[in-house]
Length: 251
Ligand code: SLL
Image: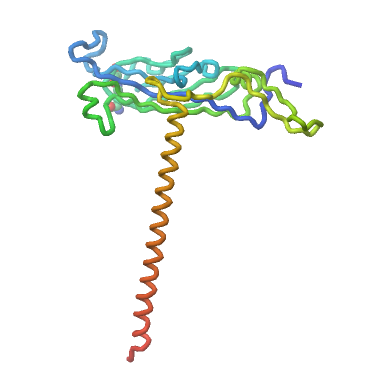
């Protein structure tokens, strides 16, 4: 019988949800500095947690707490609804603690992430980006895994109840159970778009790149092994040629 409080867990099921977290920063326009910004501030920035391609994640994420550097007034910022973000200005880079609080139905403990706020461009085009005062984006794709979610959370996550069903053609008491999925999924878009680089196409490209890299590594290992065999052969020959005169040497 399902428990009234919904604390029964859906055994053997793990559900993940993708999201993005990170920051965007831009230097002030020297001719148009925001009037309300302190004199030593140089940049405008934003730190955020959001769904892939603008997808709503508030059905599983209830609140995000961003802990900024102590130089900020009220440095712990709790954002209770989307957009889960903090807009600020400042002069320095620092580590931001991001604590994710899940909807109460989940009965899940909060989880902590860290993000390094980037104000200054980095990477090969850093100088050009700085010159043009372009937006500096530093963000990560992340997947959160819910292992054996409680039934009520499973329903929320999948958009439908977890219906344990006997597998087709295998009736009886010991028949294996499958869990039917509802309409909410962890699908990411097929192709990327200007605002969203995370797609199946990107994922496949990355997988191809990894496969290619693994191939290169295997080839290098093979070459290295051959070189090792060659060297061992030389070494054996040297030992032998050294050994022969030593044995015949007369004292
Ligand atoms: C650094 N370790 O020295 C870092 C600290 C602090 C950033 C950076 C503004 C705070 C305020 C601000 O940008 N703090 O409004 O006073 O680079």
